[in-house]
Length: 295
Ligand code: SF4
Image (cartoon, rainbow, N blue to C red; front, side):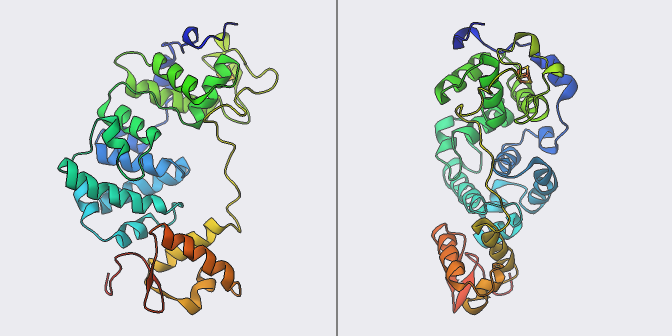
């Protein structure tokens, strides 16, 4: 089978599969740029089922850019607690401030302006353009990167994967096309057990589950997360959750992080939280940035 990238565009009839099989996810009912941005930042590193629970709650608390920008970061971090990778909350708060200061409260449309926002990289910028503004942009997350490698039958560079995705977007269907590919990767062309029998691409796919998987080592295909249990991430998350209730004294730090007796580890890890802007030194302990008594 020809694996020349330019000749391997995905077939537009995939949209028919999408219209029957796409998941009903709450953020897909919205084209509001702020709501889409919040969903995309959450989805960067949190499982879809957790985002289904927490995205509506976050938007009740911060329904627009102005409501997020107007509070101290402590309030956004506290609302984010439990979603993991809390640095995203700090970036989202900073992004809201920048949107208020530079864009009059409107999330920008241009890729360069989106990528200039804190915490918004090329993927998130493209996702906001595709899902909120519905301008021609192909998104390539780990699910889409996996499909593209298998479809072409070989490992792709990041440039090849993005070019192929860009060329494949059917004109006028940017939203539904991207959502369809994300779901094909999440539901059918999965990392461990691709269901080629039921796949709408099966008759034209170069790999079809035979031989070594070309997605392994292909650009943009994730190798999976390291275990959470016992990790520094777990201790960071515990401390941020505890700080949501108020400051933690230095003497209680190790206990709050779940490592009683291991003060050295607690101090090392809290240093990374301070460096990330998630935690500040406060009196003889630690607090969320902008925390004030009574908040
Ligand atoms: S045929 Fe199999 S490997 Fe190819 S895209 Fe479909 S599920 Fe993935």
